[in-house]
Length: 125
Image (cartoon, rainbow, N blue to C red; front, side, top):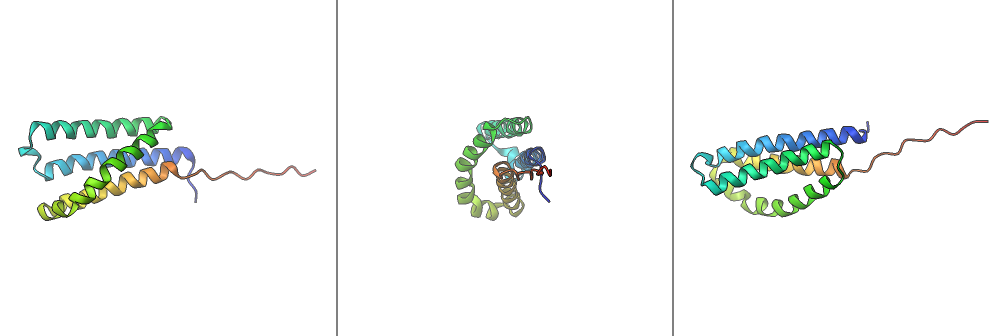
């Protein structure tokens, strides 16, 4: 079964939205109530960026997948470095961090997956 181009875009957009919701859960599991104003502001900005990217991807803007790629390159390394500390502090937060990264990587793979070309019917004379 192959997915159409629009189906891939819709699924990727949904995956990014789910990762945004999980990012909010991750924030609260990591002590969001006692976090500083700067951390709360950074979380709100990250959520806004993710939701805007999901919107632009769903509307078919091609540059949004490149922006997602750039953001993932910038954020995946610190996530991987901090993952052991996150698991030591809160097991659930560590699992959610892994799920967030997997959802965003999966959305990126869907967006960069080439479309399968439809076979052209030969005219029989």
